[in-house]
Image (cartoon, rainbow, N blue to C red; front, side, top):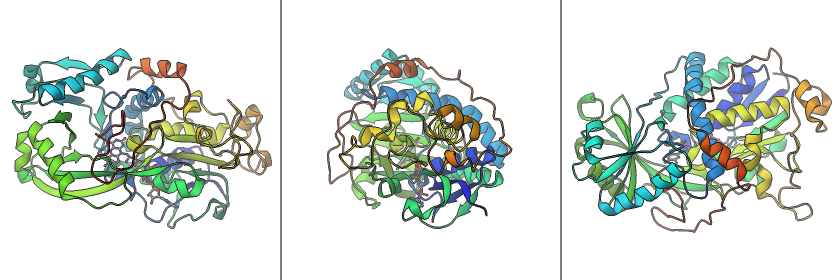
Length: 450
Ligand SMILES: Cc1cc2nc3c(=O)[nH]c(=O)nc-3n(C[C@H](O)[C@H](O)[C@H](O)COP(=O)(O)OP(=O)(O)OC[C@H]3O[C@@H](n4cnc5c(N)ncnc54)[C@H](O)[C@@H]3O)c2cc1C
């Protein structure tokens, strides 16, 4: 193969989606990974939950989650068409529940915040809850509906993305990337999840999550259709039903880098799950697993040009949200590759929010505010006026057969937050994350659900 236009490091959902989008625009793309799909996505639940995951102090992140969730319906349809793979994309919505009065009080604080920023959370009386899901325990004190929080099966998503990327012409290269200088491409996109830290020096750390998979007896579908997220005697748990009979029960949040499964975590997850949906006690326990989320200091992804490294883009640090953020990340990074102009949506997530000022070392000088990354494409790079030597400046690469894609639909989900987010400061609150040696380390407003 001739020199690649784009080398993508990492074949998880993010890397494969970026590769698909770039290849579909006619670029020569290689994707480098010794074990495609073996990262966090291999255990992820697949909740697409910008509402339930809207936390205090994360307005910009919430705006991006809302934006990406709105792109999911068209993205899923397009991906299924391109790959021939059904993704298990389901739109029944999410029920948010509290088992005890204390649990409900805790949950209501968050729902009030979510409503305040314009997200659709509809409180439900216990009888309304049980009308929707009779499988809920009679003890459940109350809840709410997040109708626009959907789900997809990551174990179907990743193979679909791989097929679509390969059909569009991307070439998978089986092997790890030890250093970025090993790659010979006009643009490199680092989408290696937790592996991005060693390649870029950016502060991406593993955040362990233990998760269980249950299966309804006799090959039946689970006895509930909504995703259920709840507080049960102070424990937080989510239950994600799949049509094939599987229920994903998750997850711990631990500042650890091992992937061992502990008896205590299994016990706590199962107890909370059965407290909310008693019939789960009759299900088979078919899998226990742990994965490592690529976490960042402010819980938000790192998207854009790596300071001091022309031609190196980062799409990593998606932490608890890499599945929901797949469409928007792929679109914005492919746009950046081909036009050289960072979309304004990228502004709060630029890598330079974590790098030192010039002269202090670290990963290099931060880009000037609003500066455009250089582009693979001719037209876009001319407009950006920010050609990078050896990349756009060479004029060596431009999209061939650029496949015009329909603009992503923008009306399917509330955008109140996105506009509110734009008014806030860059980077969101940097949540200090404490170390910990046991299950479920909770810090500030950190989400212990996902
Ligand atoms: C328990 C759990 C539950 C989750 N639930 C959800 C959820 O409900 N919704 C949601 O949106 N997100 C969820 N997530 C988060 C989500 O899984 C991640 O954010 C997402 O997988 C990140 O995608 P990625 O492609 O960046 O990284 P990964 O999925 O981790 O993939 C990274 C890939 O890079 C490769 N790689 C690493 N280093 C190198 C290297 N040096 N060279 C070449 N290749 C390399 C790896 O082999 C891997 O294939 C969950 C995560 C966990 C652990």
